[in-house]
Amino acid sequence: MASNPASNPASSAPRGLVLTVDERSAPVRVSDRDPLIRLFGPVEVVGAHGPVEQSKRASLTEMLAYMHLRPGARDTDFCADLWPGRRVAASTRLTAASKARRWLGVDHREVHYLPRADGMTGGYTLRDEVRSDWSLIRRVAASRKDMTVQQLAAALKLVRGKPFEGVPRDRYSWTSVIHEQMVQDVVDVAHELAERALDAGDTETALWATERGLVADPIPEQLWRDRLMAARGDVQLHRHLSRLMHAIAHSEDYTLSTETENLAQIR
Image 1 (cartoon, rainbow, N blue to C red):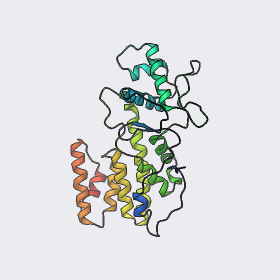
Image 2: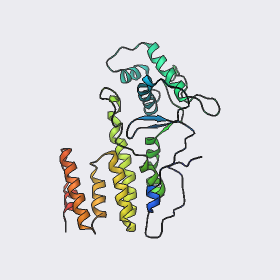
Image 3: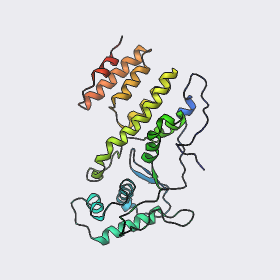
Image 4: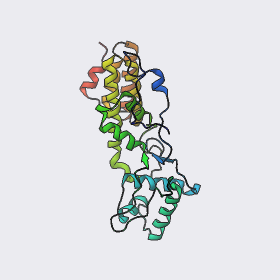
């Protein structure tokens, strides 16, 4: 079985290095026994065991992401969020949920990953075996001080892009309230790894960790400060990173803090 980003492999890095080049470049391995919902970058469901109509894949993907992020949502919220501005018949909701259930399929015990909604206790809730890249990252972020550098790196490798990148403008409006927390979890993991790398003098790992973190959002100042700290001994790199940071801040109409601006100065 493939290993989990929260597994605890032994470090193979030489003394003085936090991570080797091979450890940084090795692909992340996540168990493929159960379905996984990818939320960083283009949203997709991988490892589903059943059939799905191609024309329904996009809407059912959003529905499964919703069930994962808002378990047990009331029918009124469920319909308002997934069919905004429309009056939806109960039969439409039930048919869509049935298709999602069939697509996720069953586990090795022949139990559906998506149980039927319980009208007494709430709406649809996916089984715990159905995870997302964010749920894996969030678990690492919550216990980052106790995680190994390999666990931190594995979590960062799950980040393929910004949260919900490229989704249609008329879909996923219900995700706006969680974007900040998703990015913050990635920033926390990246900063933790960068900080350990800087303490050990491993500037390459610090630069790699912050680069991975900035994939989720190009502007978090903590990660830019970590990058500038890593480049202190290389004037050309420091100047390049400073220019890049200012260009991104300008494009985002973002004002950098005095602390960050001070680190950006060549001394």
